[in-house]
Structures are given as structure tokens and as C-alpha cells.
Length: 99
Figure 1 (cartoon, rainbow, N blue to C red):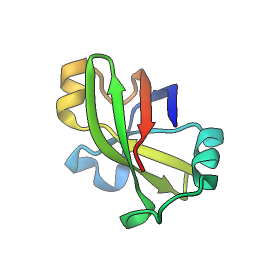
Figure 2: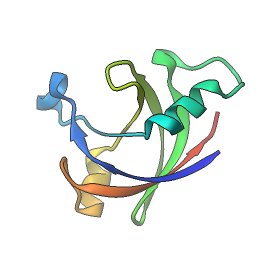
Figure 3: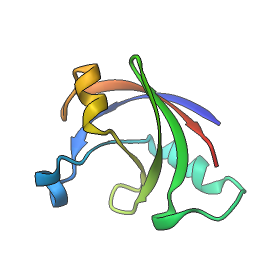
């Protein structure tokens, strides 16, 4: 499954000092992912993904966020710096489920 969407980057307030920055997957896509058959989810209900933002591609995981009712994708600092994006910016995300 490959998904392309636009999303705003946001900082996780519980860990703001650690610079955890995420984008939220659209709720309809998150629902679709939750309904997919497949192997059991990994720790914290995560799923492995390959992500592209701008010219940067990396492997990571998405995590379910009960508060937002969707999956969230961490965007590490090296990617944010390479793509010149930060919390509050909107970016296009291409995400491929690997699990």
C-alpha cells in the first residue's frame, strides 16, 4: 500500500525538549490501515514504512495515536534539516507500508 498526502508537522508536547516532530496520517487512511489483514503489529502497535519527503527517503515506523484517532509518523531532525521543514510547515509525504 502506497499513500501520498499533505500534512502539517507538529511537535509532541510531552517530549518537546527532545524535538520529537511528527505528521499525522489522514484519519480515513489510518482507518484503512487498521483494517488491513496481516502479521501482528510490532511494539506500540507500530508498522514499518518507507517514507519520502522531498528528496529524502528513509525507513521508519508509524504508530497509532489514540488521542488523534490516526497513525502518526515521526520525522527525524536530519530529514527536517535536509528538507528545510519544521513544526508548523505543511509537506507532501509519500508513505509505503512494508509490513
